[in-house]
Length: 454
Ligand code: TRP
Image (cartoon, rainbow, N blue to C red):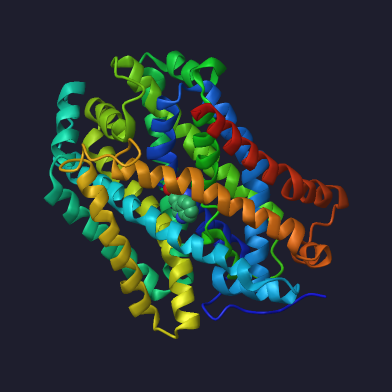
């Protein structure tokens, strides 16, 4: 029996609109900023291999589960989990997954916005030709000048949060489709341009070897956890974002196909970004493990030395801001839909309220790069701590719960009916993955990581 509920918050016009929006959510700073720097910090090749395995074995099945749950429930994640649990005569406590997701969304958005602010600042650095002819040292100084200035960071963080709230307050199903349709391909073209530059910059072979020649002795269990956490982060999984987007998906669209397309697009962008960045790192003798500043210290070198670099550099950072923006929206959408559904708040008020909360927490991240740089939580700066807590702990746990819910709590017939996978073998494979493989893998990585600490 099929259920024809519709979400009160709107619906995507077509399957492609959903693919675009979900790709917009998935492709963001995670691919272009985070993936290269955590790859660099964790020794390269082996980390990339683990990350790719996690995308295939954990990411895609959980994405399908999240979209499926979302479409079945057609409500905010909190209310969807509660309603579906009730339908299956299970305890309403499953709604806590939705709550945890809302919290994770706030925490991630709070620092995401600060980093997106760096990208905004770089639009103006690039536009004023600040990179032209610059040396690695000069570029390093531009970056450290920026992050050591709390006022400037706060200003950009505020601007980014305001534009995010502006879109969320209008409802994501409206403006987002168009923005993603044109801007994502444009970003891809610019990444390919950078890749072309890197291929000719001299250290391409070294960059490729760093990214793809696995050296497992360079990878710790903590590195494995980071790779797994990043598979969730980069696909926007584990906190309800993709679930909300799924709740706007037309009933006849194939969940399996769309999930695979989104994961491939997302992974492709990350790999291209890495391949563009590491050859520049090696050609300039820069450290691979320089952390969150990596792209801001390498890509400007490429723009500073290529013909038309001022133009391309400006365009690149504009598009990066857009990519961050289409991701940021999905981080507070679960909270906003809940406020609208349950507290009957109007969408504008709900967006401003949630945006303000994330903005406030973000001040901690702003300070963690300057005046609080030496204040450590568990040996990490406030920013590193938030990132670790959300990406490596909250998202995998959320994903684990989603897998258990789809695999063990929901009735098999319902799940099958909603997924509409015609090939029985394919369905069975997915079912085994969410029931056994993904929960087991997540728990195993947690255990090994904890054992490694002792
Ligand atoms: N996936 C986005 C990126 O890679 C970030 C993001 C958006 C996200 N929504 C999310 C991460 C939900 C985790 C959960 O930049």
